Length: 343
Length: 172
Image (tube, rainbow over all chains, first blue to last red; front, top):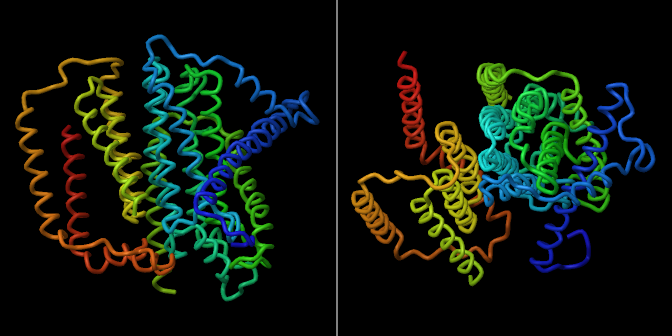
């Protein structure tokens, strides 16, 4: 413990749960405000929200208030139980993602031995919520959107997992804290000045992870499940108020979590040269800020691509995953394995 | 150990009730969703047994892939809301006998093999020793040394099933 207080197990657990429950909406708000409201607007030569607060900074409070006031509606023929459970399943998946992300030597909810594997496993639960939403809405557009989402998320989960395997082989660990340590203690050609962020050796893995993340989060150009021009809003079409907000929290909270995972695995995580990787108050205080900056950097890339490219076609999406990304990921794993054995 | 026993009781109850609902519900999508509850409780039981890796595999493979494919197939072919009829076939007795037989064989094997064993006491060990002894690394070492041959045989079996599925699906 860094603090001089000993807490009981349940007290620690309570603090951790509360921390995650505060971090998820905050992270979502930061992502939406920075990228979706302001960056997108400026990239498209318009102002975006300007009225609420300085430069529109309080727009989210206004939007949140608006969503909270709306009535929860369900279609007449909907399967009500499944319909109302679905957003919670998506949100659960996002909340669990934050459990393993380390922001400092001690600033982590639970440094699981299986770290990154846990994150990939819980992220796959969200598909279930999307399928539930699509089916229970009793709406053909919603069902089409749910099916598209399932097909897409299954296809892109493979490159996502396979891209991570390269990092795991190089670090020799699944634990995210261990992966940060491996990068901090590594050296580039014997020069250990900045450690060895895995982006230098795993740049193919990084690119694969970003593309697969883009598809997993159903961000454009991979937004066929909610394609407005074809499917109204896909599986989200029948949701209102708080339930709709849950889907947004799930989507952009996961965007933040996946950016943080990419920053942790490829950019060195919370570590910068000069910090003590084993602990200490300074590392625990500076670490979260470092991770935040790196996370925003990765999130910027994701949203930059989102605002730049038009939507793919469904068959292009599947071909891209199965015939290009997965073989490339396998070659990357093979190459990493060879290098690991030879050097 | 009280907390563990309590947790086991709750999880086992959820698993059994959900399993019963899988076969009694009148809606195929609901059946698949109850199956998620069954598999999730089993995954939680793995956590209770300190088998974190297995629990994550359970979630990733069974919930994240297999049930999702079930749901995908069901929704693509018969997306009916509400109760359905004609879900039963006439193999009810055969299924009951098979289930009882499997239960008997598994119980016999477990009691015969591990009946006299106690669970290892883990309270005294610290976290790092525990991880080294039975963590993910230990599982990996076991799979790729002691159990290498069974592992490879299962891999080939799965590959054969995959090739067979493709061959059957693309008979044109």
